[in-house]
Image 1 (cartoon, rainbow, N blue to C red):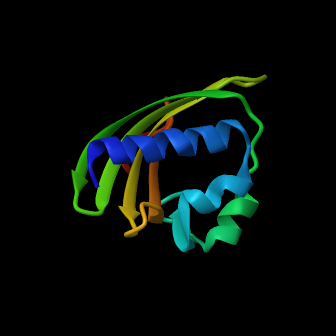
Image 2: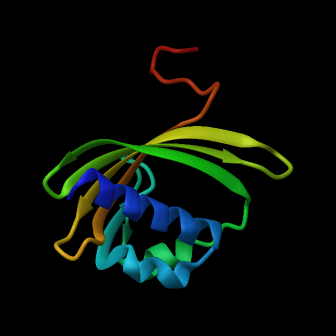
Image 3: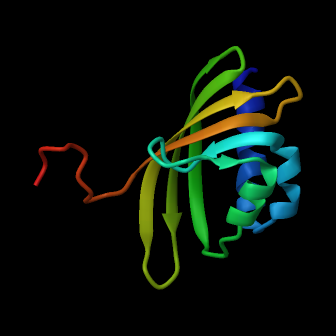
Length: 123
């Protein structure tokens, strides 16, 4: 994978999310994808589970950049700002592993929200 390939995948992911288009996820993820919404929660296993989870009509903006690419692995930093009645933003790192066909077979999120503690000792 090259940085441009990863950013092309990110753009398609954003389009599918913005369009609330679970039907297009087969072009982004393998049938047996492991999708971790948090590194500490059980993963969604398989494309059907991701499609079921996907619908979210909340308007948002997103900025993303590739942090690193090494072979089939990539790290992307994303900043997402939700609109609506209760605006929310967060920064996120995505750890991605791509299959040979360019779809993601492993997706792992590390999200952080403003004002939330980031250490066990924080009050």
